[in-house]
Image 1: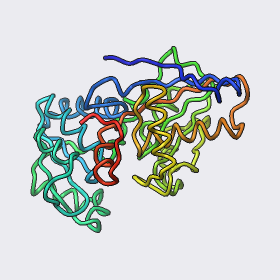
Image 2: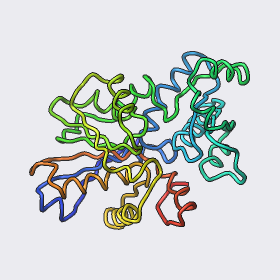
Image 3: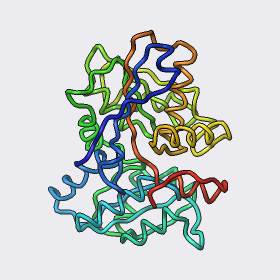
Image 4: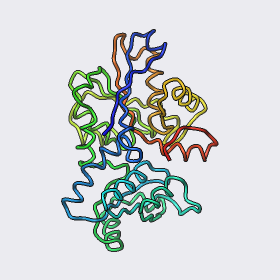
Length: 296
């Protein structure tokens, strides 16, 4: 397993006497990248323990989790089923094409049905239709995922601030659990609205050394701006580190903006977690005629 931590060089950091590092867990695996590796690790072990041969999960048409689950399940010899929000589209986009090519059976349901996906009736109907399976929630967040993401930090990660992008809250919950009391964990949600997210995080962790930074979602999940895209491209050319437009790009934009506004005291050290998600950039490129780096 390959991970490296890189220090970022930038005049703004020097000017404010701040050191910024990025932990490249996106390098763990080309396809089961970043936080998805940790979220799936114990879920797959649990399926093996329960002697279940099928993994079922949920996601949208551009979901990093769908792509990673399809690839990881095939690697481990499991059948995978994806319950996809929205209508079947032909041709398939790059994310769903990748999932299908790696053995995932795609089942499309309406957005109204999708909102019922965790009800007992819905799950029972799926079991009657599809047989026995190990279910992984949308985004991969459950107790097995949080157990996995608690392994992201190690004894070398001693920075004052730990920053991560947030989707469903499983990654930050594990990071909070393994952080030290003198560290502050900052989460950058990719979606608008944080009440349910905060409630979810509190259900996975009883520590208090964390805060959500809710000003950098750029309008919501998968919403972007010219300023954000320009930042991601500049960062890539200057640092040789690719960021995605849904999660890590918004987080890193937020970190630099907070440094500019003196949020971090002089002398602070910051560790940003690169949670992967680069496959999503190919879909962004197609939808918005961009040229973001990706791994598909």
